[in-house]
Each structure stands twice: as C-alpha cells, then as structure tokens.
Length: 272
Image 1 (cartoon, rainbow, N blue to C red):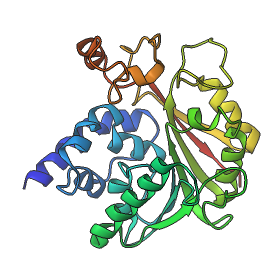
Image 2 (image 1 turned 90 degrees about the horizontal axis):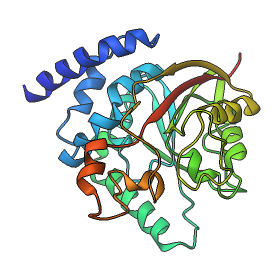
Image 3 (image 1 turned 90 degrees about the vertical axis):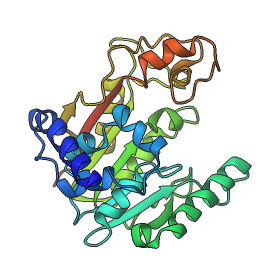
C-alpha cells in the first residue's frame, strides 16, 4: 500500500512538468519502482534533486527499450532502470575499466557487481560493459540500443580530452532514431567553457555542440533539474554542494539550504 500511495504522488507531481516538456505521461510502473523498498532511504532522499520519474519520462524511457547507462557508479539509476526494463528490454551498465590501476575504481566495480549479484530478481539481466579511453569504447553492439543515458559525466571526460570520444561511442551504440539523454551541472550562461571543467560546471551550449559534433540532433530541453539557488561560485566547485560537501562543516547549513547543483537536461536523437 505504501508503495502504491507513493507511486500515485510521484505520478501526480510529475504530470505537469512532463507534459509541458513534450514527454508522455509518467508510467505508474516506473513510479512504483522509484518508490520501492529495494532503494535505500539515502537514495530516495536524493529524488528531490534528481527527479528520476520526471527525468526518465522526459527522455521517453519505456520498459521494452534496450538502454545503456554510462558510468553508473554505485548504481543509483541502476536501481530504477534495471528492474524497469528487465522483462521486456535490456540494461547495459557501461562502467569503469576493470583493468584500471586505481584502487578506488577496482573497489567501485567490485561493489557494483556485488550489488547486482545480491538481487538477481531485480538485476539478473544487467549486462556490464566498459567505457574507457582510448581503446575500450564499445558500450553495446553498434547500432543496437534504443537509448543511452549519461548523468553528470561530461565534466569527468573533459580533463583528459575524452568528451568527443565519449559522444562518438554513444552515437555508435544507438540505433538510427535512438535517443541520447544528458544531465549535467550547468555553468552560468555566457561564461566561457573551461576546457578542463575544473569547477565541474559545463556550459549547456557547449554540451549541445559536443553532441552535434558526434552527429546528434537536439530534440528538447527540460528544466526539471534546474536549481536557481545554485550560485555556482564556490571555492571548491560544484563539489562544495551536497552530497559531497568538500569543505566539510564549513558553511554546511548554507550549502544544505541550496541543495544539489543546477542541472540542464537535454534529449537528443540519432538521425534516421
């Protein structure tokens, strides 16, 4: 009963935003998964900032789709997308390189794999692939998937100059007519893009240009993940804000009141 009530609330609050953003009505099944007890209280608390129902509805996610998520990290979105497409579609987790030397990467991959193994009823169909530069960029068989999703990853690719290669990999994986969904920390309008993205913020127009260079066509924008409280001028970049709190307890109440970052949400399509 609790899950059904929560799902009903999620559907109701998302309906106006989704319809205004030229997206279909929210799916009650997706809302029920988001409200599910398999998600930790900590992860559910971040729904207020990440808006998973509204975001995935805007992107056009359906349960019969083959979907790639880029660098799922601890599996926040895996908990939602994996069960949603398990029976009729497919979920590819295009993660970090298991051959990487960095210990935190190896531990992260092991923890993610353990998460999948612990709930085969939810994640038994998840396919783990790799996105690592320069040589490991086949995130799914070429031209095979309906949707690729990337959440706050562009700034991670830019310091080593890998953003174009990442967008090219996503383009290759998609079927003609397939969808690319992008969410990223939004830099102030008109601010020149730092090629290293040291602050973690990315120009929305720069992200659109990266996608266009790869061959994508911008289809729609949504403000569902906007946060006008975010002043974007912090001493340690976007990581000053929650959930990272890179400054520790310094001005913590102030940053908690701001919340997570202002983010753009873009939907692209592969022509054809």
